[in-house]
Image (cartoon, rainbow, N blue to C red):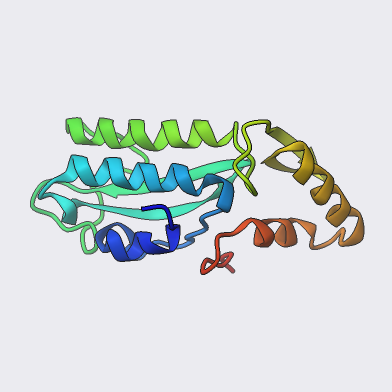
Length: 166
C-alpha cells in the first residue's frame, strides 16, 4: 500500500476515534510502514489497539497510540496507564519502539516531499523539518501571511483527503 488515504480502510481498527489525523506527504511512508508493522504484530489482537493521534509536533511526526489489556477493546476501554506509558506486555514495548523510530526518522525527512536533505528549521517560533527548497517556500509564506503562515504551510503539506484539526 502506498496511498495513505487507504490506511483507515485497510486498518479500520487503528483509526477509530483518531483525532487529529494529519498525514503529511513527506512523512506518509513512515506512517504507512508503522501501520503495516503494528498490524503484523497484533495478529488476532487488533481490538486492543488504536491510534489516538497522528500529527506534527515540535517539527516532527507525533504518533499517539492506545494498547489496552488482553480482552479489552481499545475503542471502548481506556488504557490502564497513561496514553504514552509502556506497560509490561512485550507488545507494548514493540509498538512503542515502532512509533518512536518513525517519529525520530521524521526529523530527517521534509514534511512536504520526504527529501532526506532536510533538517529541523525554526521561523517565528514554529519548528518544522523541511528541505532547502521548501524552506524558501515557508519563508515566503511567513512574510506574506505573518499571522497565518503556519496553517498555510501545514495545509500545503497534507496528503489529499486529510485536514488540519480545528
